[in-house]
Amino acid sequence: MKVIGGLGGIYVYASFASSTLTFADNDPSADTITDSAGLLLTSGLVVGMPITVSGTDSNDGSYTIAELTATVITLAAADELAAEAEGDAVTIASAVYGYQLLGFKNWSGTNGIDKVDASCYEDYPYKTHITTLKDWTATIDGYWLSTERSSWLGRTLALRLYHRFTASPTATAPAIYWSGDGIIEGIPEGVPYDALITESFTVQGNGLLTEAVKTDAWS
Image (cartoon, rainbow, N blue to C red; front, side, top):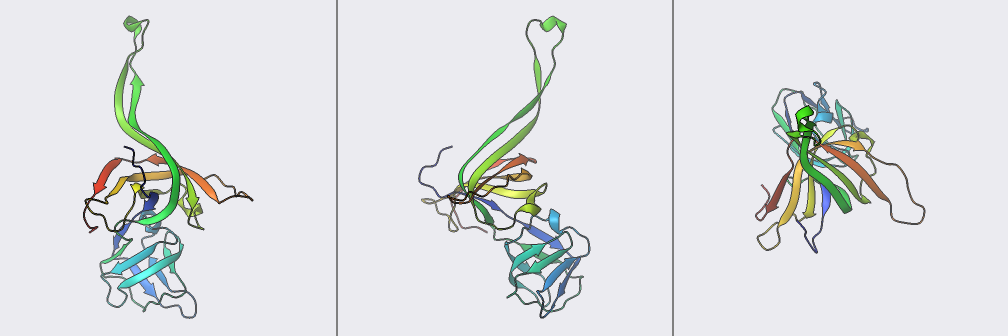
């Protein structure tokens, strides 16, 4: 598919539900959300992501992740929490359409299949092959938007590769994207002295890559 004149980007999205979250008011230090199960780095959350918390007694609302480990979300300095123990079924989620990591100049990838060599002597002089599992990879080049990226490496994130992004899709102005889980394999380091900061990273697909054209409101 080719889309001319669209606005694209690479987005990550997350929805994490747990009953093992504790909320701490650490005034004057930044407030924190702690997961005793240590699953935050497998949740799809990333540093800089605006999140919505729901299902709590006192802390439903919107916040921004300033720091992230497997067990602790540290919120932006302006965000305020009330002390609350774990036990409720709490959901932490990004915006439905995701959080932008990169505004891309281009991305390229392969959505194909693996194969195994099934040749035997009677096939001479030609080889024969058997197809096995589907596979996808992507290499993405663009302008960096986030100051934190080291925690992405080796993680599986839920990605949307937008050819055209809009927060309010319609039939005449749709959001057009590919979506799938991908492992961030490589993030080259380097900053030019005389140009915009550009970066690239490689993704190994983990499961299905699906094309979508969104023509109605996100929900």
